[in-house]
Length: 103
Image (cartoon, rainbow, N blue to C red):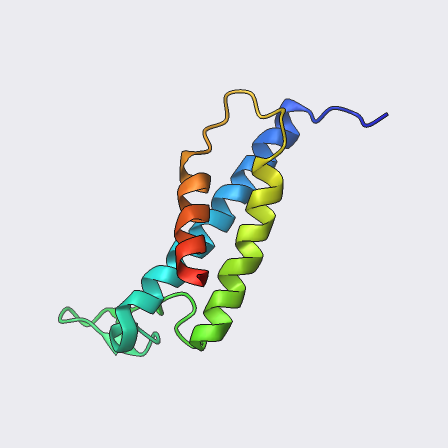
């Protein structure tokens, strides 16, 4: 018999899922910037370093692979039936965006 997940474990899993959703949205956002994506070597008008966009160094195929891996994890986790009141809106939105991106 499989032991039920604790509330604490569900919260940890949900936080990890939100991190995965953030990976998907960040990679897509960086891709959409094209050549305007920052590599971390740019300085703004106030002299502050503009942080690198996540995945700026990846090829398009590498970005698609990264998004696909994160989506796979999220799809498995969101399918669990014991989430209770955890909000899956951001997770489901990231999965949908990832499916469009990966094609």
